Length: 196
Ligand code: IMP
Image (cartoon, rainbow, N blue to C red):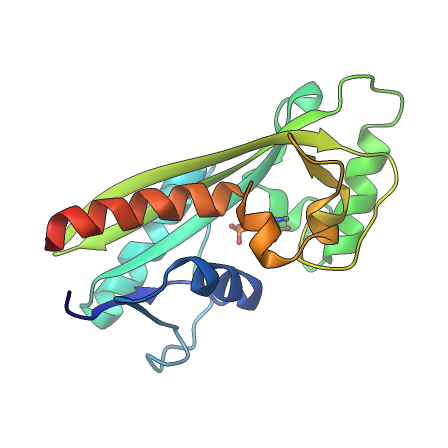
């Protein structure tokens, strides 16, 4: 199969590392840096789907190449699926991962239901048409964070089927459960069909 180049519309280095561990040959990821693009991609909408679309259409307009983006949210059921689409800025603009975790743990104090899911929406623009793929990982928010790996809410999220948080796992272990892996696997299956 010929090489398939895809621009990945993100500036998030953690996501680039994770996606590169999933999308192997014949796929080749072109980062925004590789493509010479240095912009903050807007995420102005109130759904993951609309934000993912906005990111991939923005980058498609700039590059005119096949590209994809992803938007991910942590949805905690007992607090109306918060932080959801606001996951990156839950504690406010300019706050960091630790601030977001602290606020989440505070908002869950005294709650017996700590079930949650990560949901990833991938927007692929392939030959000028958009396709969406979704991946979900169910799990629980623990009371005290554990682990140093990964990013975002990884230290407080234990996926169903494990006793460890994502932050206690290698990327390969996280991929056995991960929302992002599930969404990208659908993208891979779709593209394999298109190019076969
Ligand atoms: P976005 O898709 O870049 O808008 O990501 C939103 C936020 O969700 C990130 O800043 C992280 O805080 C969080 N997030 C996204 N994916 C993951 C993940 O795989 N593990 C933990 N946190 C994540």
